Image (cartoon, rainbow, N blue to C red; front, side, top):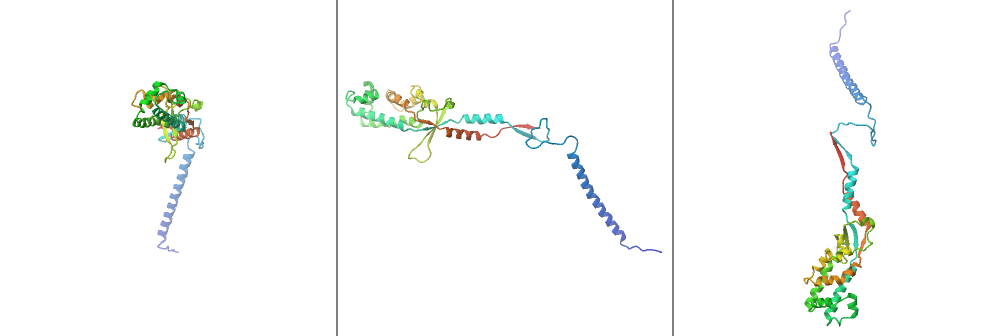
Length: 276
């Protein structure tokens, strides 16, 4: 007996075969991916068993363009070098120096009002260790109201650097700072807006034994304010002993440490770079 097949059976067979081929292709891709992953993970050689933070005890080769290793010694040395450049911080109280300037000005007024060295009060001559020669030099610089006013201004100008810099006492700095060659001196400015006046000066400018030396910068700056080449040295000789015995600077350890820590923090971490 003959059997008839539907006319559409052949197209259905083709569609089913196409779906099977597509399914096989996807499965093949998945299998290939799994095989490739297994080859990478379990390929030749031992697996990479190191974890973050571990230090390997054998040579490690990596396929990168370059890598960096922190150089702690270099970083520490650079940071310390920068910190060493920060001067010691000192607080200046200029009141004793201003008082000394006023007393010197009062002396010139007293001399200007006197008629002779002998009429000058004995207490004044003894206090300032005056000699007739010194008296005559100051008397000649104050013999008119104009000269007296000009001398007051010159004394004020000569004392300005001393007021701004101050005087360092013999035991003001700790042993750890005795080798410091520069000082950062903060002088408050009462009655003025803004912060204190800050001067970075060489230590020799505020050390008493150097301040009073004729070849020192402090002495030279003082006498240069007077046109008369004899008057400046005479006036300085009158105040030198008092100036050396009037320390005005106080060491500021907290400020010094804070400024040096800030200087260290300004230096970035240094690295050794290894290129391929």
